[in-house]
Length: 395
Image (tube, rainbow, N blue to C red; front, side, top):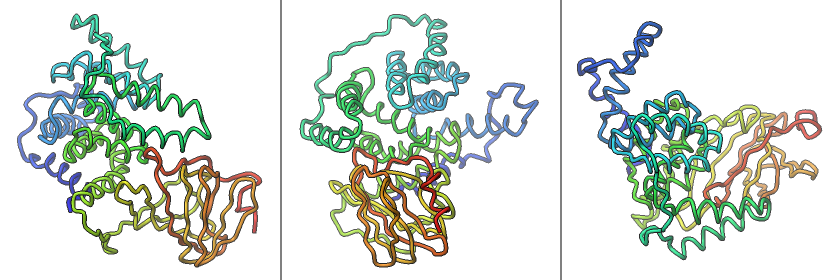
């Protein structure tokens, strides 16, 4: 089975395979870079523009789409102009650049999109580009599949509408029934831009849905891997690496769908990661990730809490099941009393119930956590437990 991790590593090896080749033909890094940070200058000329931009896993046009998307998504507007020029040189049309900015308004916020407009306008003015077309007639090939659209709408209505009905309305009508169908950007490119924006801004959980959508829209695994490798240079290694486990699961699901066979995830292949401090308090390790093959939507992992460690407040759109395998812990839904849980207990947490769970102050806890994804997301994280609800004050 060809996993995403292997694909990403393969991309990185392809990028560095020419490392012994002579220095870049000409310097791209400004003289100030060599004056202040000569190592950065060498990496800029020899690695980034000498190797990464020349790697064959993405076309120059796609690399420009990835780069401009990353810069806008992460608010690096000073660099947008130069890479917009490069994008035009690499075959991205002005209409596609405008539509990319429009797409990013929905996925990274209006301020980022509006701020980028002024940088792009300077480039358009330099090149005499004016009168961008905004055709709205939907080509027949972009018309959504009726059954798939009905399933997507039903998912949004179930998971979002009960809590945020207007957000549900805009998700259905403005986002998926309008923006995603605009003809100025192909579905394949729209998926690429969306995946890149999510990875670049650290929205790993949202990547799952859009990576699968990207594969359906014509992106290859190699192209997605190449895009994420490219993002590492423009948004930082942590953002790229954080997406590996999610994308590997998506690619493994695709393998399983193709094979039609029973799949066994071997214990020796399990990976263990430290849970992020943004969502957990104390020492927490997560391992044995699993994800069901579509149309099933469940997934999860085994979570190990050190004494006193716990989650932040969070919710699950379709609820969560916890199976306690070791130790003693606690769980609480907002407004209810804290409950003690022990080895062998099975805990059901209803959909959209704001809650936390973790280890007892003087005991460890391990549990299997299982949840279903709705519209690509299985969890919404909130603030850390504190104040009167802080379990550290309750012995």
